Length: 339
Ligand SMILES: Cc1ncc(COP(=O)(O)O)c(C=O)c1O
Image 1 (cartoon, rainbow, N blue to C red):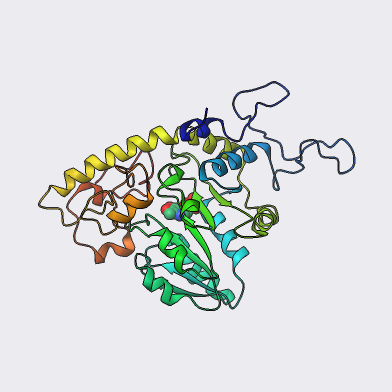
Image 2 (cartoon, rainbow, N blue to C red):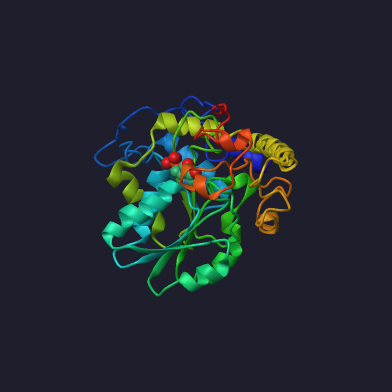
């Protein structure tokens, strides 16, 4: 039997041949015994370069994203940093959204510029702006959709149509593979902060990159090198927790979406509320695109947006608790109550 919810539980793991545990064991071992010089038993040698608990999570997420492979990292930012380091070198150029997650934006603006990587910041909701920004040396187009924080919707298919030689990377954190499959829409690489919906319980930080060597030749090997060389690997404990969260992704997302829809409808009806950023509302500028590229059709994104500090002055004064919530944990099952 297959299906998203079933795959989320079973994909990537066959019960261990020793005792047959139905759950992925936490292989808390730095080093693995060898049967002779360079004769690795199951392909594992040292946890900084690979661990069976980590592999189980990688296989599960790859199956859900429809990817050939996935490589897990210690955080979403570690995953993003590795992608950029593999795909960009001095003299290259990247096109990034004006509403990408702040950490991604800072990394590109403040770190990669030091190494001679140019960038152009565009309104990604307008594919013409992206097309105009692509240069001969553009190696990466960085899409996030829905965006953090404003829940802008970027048309992945349209951006794939204007990307030319660039690699199209999609940060699918806000949607999760349950609501959106970027590879089907033309993405070359998909990245997640698994800290959010995939982990789902506010108890573990992680990141994962999904890819396909037919789309970006040699990328998998480079991701693995960085995983081990840089030491950006996640711990077996963390990947166990993330994998446990993943098993209930489908049911949690359905509930998140139902709740968000009810909250958005309530807020939209309040005369004191200036604007509700929720792609499920027909008034949202990305509504039609969200309907086209996200499923289920009634569930666009499981959260209403709150204004981040860097945008607080550019949006109308909020008059509802969803906007005032100071927690950084919008993606958490447990949020800080409003003051
Ligand atoms: C869309 C998005 N991508 C990446 C990240 C970074 O992930 P992490 O916090 O796991 O490093 C975040 C964090 O909030 C995010 O919202």
